[in-house]
Image 1: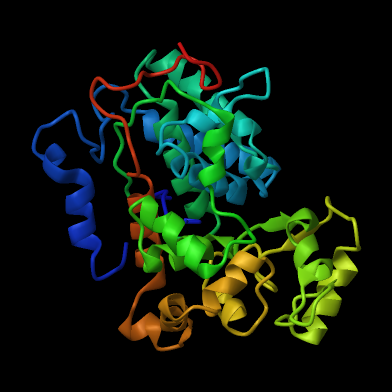
Image 2: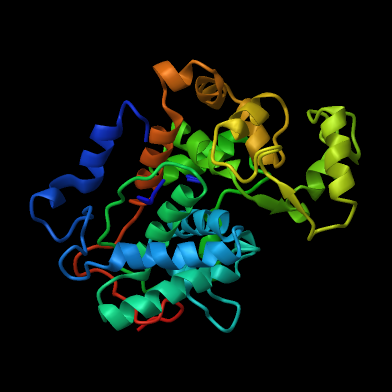
Length: 338
């Protein structure tokens, strides 16, 4: 199957054509200094199929790698742009990946495996940054999400600092803070909702909801459970995440964790968001309307069209701060600078 879709979040349907023009710019005509769909069609024709094959093979043994690859692109692109800086291993806990906000990040080995195969096929041609974006695109398709083209031609960054990761959105961020962080990366409120809806697949560690369940600041003082969580759902979450349990995992999309669909948005609207940052999307007028627009039954007929819009936001996110042309480098090994 064709492979691409965030979380992507990870773009709007009505703006799809305009978005692609912005992303591709003059590259369609000739420029090698821009991203371009099919960038490797001559220099490494097997590039995209090789990445897809590696992702498919890994997912056959462990399907949880698919949402992990989607998260990996988000974490890469939000820090210094989509330059594979998150893949660098520093050795002294000073690389970007060592930041606590990258806790539990997975999929780097999948990228490295794809890179090793591509180095044997087309040495020094395909960047790690492009492999991250292609793998996330494929992961979306393999969970039943949309298949779409992504422009390629990124180069790998030559900087990786632990503190750079501080800019990443946090599960405790308010909607206002989330909107500000997304705007800083050139993404709007619709992108925020669409890329957050990448949580339609996958799970979260109890670590990320402990504060919401047991240490939430209460209006009258003291700490307790977030009062916005419905009682039945609160009991359900507490039964899966006991006090102090950081490692057990909970579905991010209640009742639909393995299927790419709009269930996550209906859950957010109905109070069944698992992490606080998802719940926050229904506490701000700027994002409530976006959530509602995709939650209605008629949206599949009259729009907005969730799958197309999600794909557009993924393409948009994949263009954040990219290095092209002679900038950066093409690493030989993704975890090390050349």
